[in-house]
Length: 259
Image 1 (cartoon, rainbow, N blue to C red):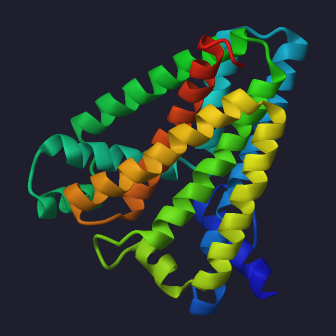
Image 2 (cartoon, rainbow, N blue to C red; image 1 turned 180 degrees about the vertical axis):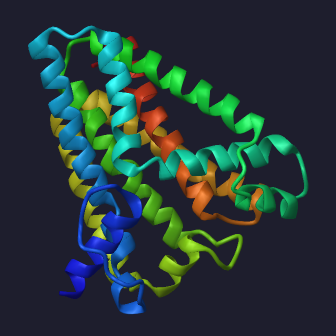
């Protein structure tokens, strides 16, 4: 029952998937963060389904790209894109560390958030349009699994990296979680995703895994140097960049003629 409650807490927090709502107690949140990648599994399945529908109905590449771009945002309720916007807004301010954290905490949306969000969505849409034209199922499977990979890595970073605030939702979840069990679940899920990716397309999977490994390291350097650690907003920023880099990685594999 405790595991089921933890799963429901994760799904109700990080998605719009209808589940029973349980109180945020230490017992209910001990394993909830480890179940965050389940949202990615749902998105991965829907992503493959959307590609199949587009191919079956002969839908144009641009409409596929828009749907594929919107799908994770809709399922997640936009929570990660919100974190992305808050983070880029703070970074673009060029203020002190304390002021950046205040900007990220502010509910108002700044001009830089709108600008960079539009750029992110346009670039993602363009890359997905190009990927659809490849007409390769294996590449779509790798890309769909990247939604699980990004959330697995996000959990790892949240558990492993220092929190910049010492408070907030992410701090509450990481502070109460059962670390040993959560690390075990996260590493196990990462291994499964890695194997499935490599089974689908070795070159594309290798590019995605390498790109994300570099991003995990770069994220730590960036977060510690600029903010003194990670926050819930930077976790959303990490996830969005991870997913965009995964699309780019698949395209690079195609461009090199290895996928």
